[in-house]
Image (cartoon, rainbow, N blue to C red; front, top):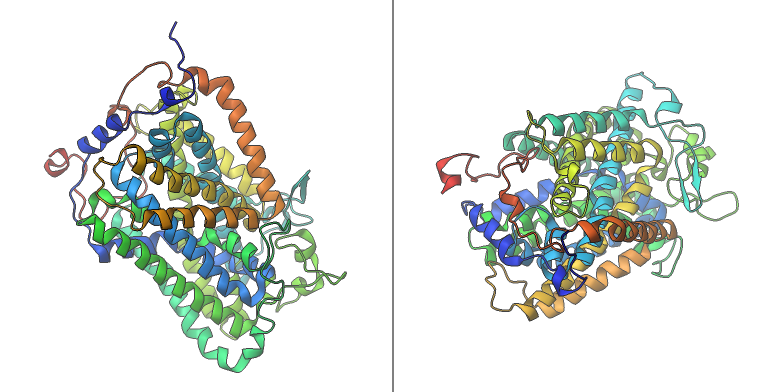
Length: 546
């Protein structure tokens, strides 16, 4: 019977083995700063800006413009830390793999467990956002789905609450998750060209919105007052309201920037081009978001909706949606599940609103697919490390994809999408994401101390200023989430630790002395869903084998 190593330095995954994988799989360095910037813009723009504008407005009113800046800054410093490890360890597993190599198995498990919130609940949030757009589009065409099949029920499980009164299940969200799960199981690969088209659609839709609404701002400056109707918020607040609370929610609008970090292996002169790509894409997206938010506020208004007791409604709550204001034809921005399309329809441009809704309907399913893809690959690596049942890492004999873990992920994502509103899902997802980013930032500083001579294609500039800023920013935003999101994360972490000590602690390959380079496993699933990056060699080509 194999002995089990104690928790401690014996539970560090060999960085040399991981780097050997990267060396074997190294790709042609072909991406420049401009390509990286475009890659980041395409990865970032998604559900957050199309849907969560309404959530941010209910939390902060016009002050949500400051929230976008705060969230963008935290993403920028976290991204710089992320890039150093991504350039050193460009293999499957993301933050989970980095943590395993630097801080050991328990932290790696907690990060991997938190990534379930980031990817799986993130995919659920996007699916619900897509559902809101397809329902709005159908309504504009005179096709009305039964209310009971378009929203989840009112759910009150202790500290969880969401949905709308009278709903049964969000059927469109479940259907899009089922479609994406099927595509991931059969291994259908989107081409890079197709992804580029979707990026253009999203950017064109937002550009259209800005072009239509910004000229209206000068005539409606009163919409910006009061600018912070719910104050700045506090990390100690339980409501998650105010500018900081909105920043914690709108953080979801930036998730995806790590696509630039993980492309470091394919980047020419990464020390120069990675920070340009990261900061450039985040800066452009932040400016874009500010223009969108400014246009939304100036053209239509974004003040929080007050309840009969004189206090603001909780964003996404049944009481908010059931209020008389939200039942009106020209309902306030905070009532809409397709915020930007709703504004265009109500400022005299119904056709443009429908076009924007169509653009979101076409583009958002690819984001669901990519988030579910990321989740299945993290699960796959954890299962191959022995921390999850190895049955999950089995590969389909025909499709060569991890079909079991993909279907498990699909069921989890579909259940969350069926019953919870988008704002709640985004906050839960952000809780896991912020923890993972803080762990990566800590790991960069530790590795600089413990292994200073290791080759680093990209080095985080001013590390001992940037990394602490990242950690502090992540902690402040996490504490600024509402009490439900913070409690869910803590409960989720405790459940994860219980599972780890009951199963992963005893089955861990590292603990049992099983040394391997799992990413070289012939049964490893192929990369599916995102297509090759521009300039990357085709799979199986002489360039890739070289």
